[in-house]
Amino acid sequence: MDRHIEIALEKRGVSCVAKLLDDRAPRTCAAVWNALPLGKDVFHGKYARNEIYTLVPAFAPEEPGTENPTITPIPGDVAYFTFDNWQLNTSSHGYAQGGRPQAAERIVDLAVFYERNNLLLNPDTGFVPANIFATIVDGLDRMAEAAQDLWLSGVIGESLTFRRA
Image (tube, rainbow, N blue to C red; front, side, top):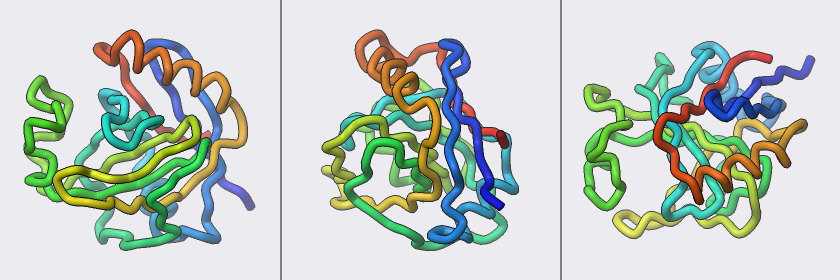
C-alpha cells in the first residue's frame, strides 16, 4: 500500500502531497515516516537552484545510508541529506542569522525540488548526492509558485513541515 506525506509552507497556507518511494529508498522512507511530523524554518537553495528545504536534528536511530541517489533532482523530487554539524558552519551558507540546529551533531536536510535544471554542487565540498525518497503527486504547481515567492520575497517567518497524509 502506498504511503503519502503532506509537505506544507505553513505561513503561506500552501501544501502538496508526495508519495514515498518505498521500493527505491526503503531505509530512508522508514526513517522519515517514523520521525514525522518534522519541520522548521524554510530556506531557499543557494547553490542547487530550484530547491526549498528545512534543517532538523538527525532523527534516525541508524543513518539510512545512500539510496536512490542523484545530483540532478527533477521537479517533484523530495530529498534527504545528512551533514555533520561542521559541514554547515561556513559563513557562505548563510546560517549565521539562525535556522541551523546548533546543538545537533548531525543535521538532516529535507528538501523539495520544484523546477528543472538543478545540480547538487557545493563550492566548498563538491557534489552532494541526495537520497530521493518521495515524489510529489499533487500540488507541485502550487508549491512551485510559493517557492518562487520565497526566492523573491524572502523566507523569514516561514516554515516547511512534513507530516503523514
